[in-house]
Length: 329
Image 1 (cartoon, rainbow, N blue to C red):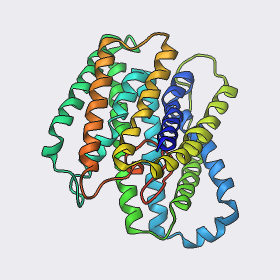
Image 2 (cartoon, rainbow, N blue to C red):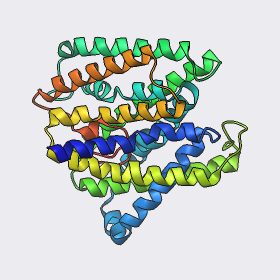
Image 3 (cartoon, rainbow, N blue to C red):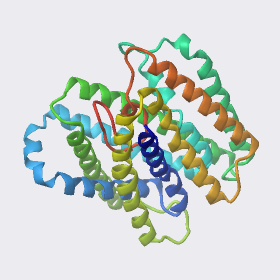
Image 4 (cartoon, one colour):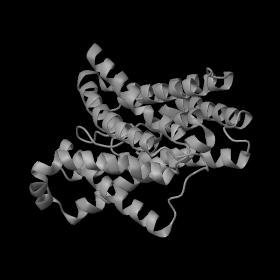
């Protein structure tokens, strides 16, 4: 089990980079960040799929293609654009803490599924999460990343939108795979990456054609750093991170694996504190403690039920492992 926990920790460390890259590349727009990241990921997925692409293509149905398109948009492109706006407008801390509520939100959205946890069992953990959200918002407006409170509010709204996008994707993807088991999880993950890359290429071409791919700020734009960061995200967060998670999910109990998702949030916060040059403020510490307790409590309640979501249904990102597993991002 120790190896499983270590792999979960390393996966969280790689996934946490997703939150710091928009801060490092603040001179690039969220659209450019999403297109760059997923062009790189799509290219890697294409290389992996190339030897068996024709055989997979013959098995694809129209429903599969529709599912891949909506999942690529909700789970990757739109999600990451919203996350990038959240980081650039509200900061790494608030955005990572809001997105860190994924396990709770997925549980709530799936409350009508067979075997779902009754909401009364989640009342106390949800109160902790709500208190954590209150601390996040108070701190975000007391120490805003921007001097414009409207900009901060937009950032928090977009971080919330990113949370809802990925939560919807996680459930829709899980349900689709259960209804359509004709693709293995590795095959579906690679097709998911390839479809995201194709959509990113189309989106980038359209943005250039219509002149909407401008920079987020007037700062100097380092394209070498841009492509280096996006290639590292594609390789580290989307490919290596997913494989590490797959190892972790096979070696630890589900009750524990759900809680390992929190490593992503904690690493994102740590990277943000290092980048910012100082540690967490009191309200940030309170928010971290409340959210960790609330999410952990929620995961434990959910894991003890007869039917539970796998981590692939709960976490942030780019692929799928296991029956409905991932990713993530």
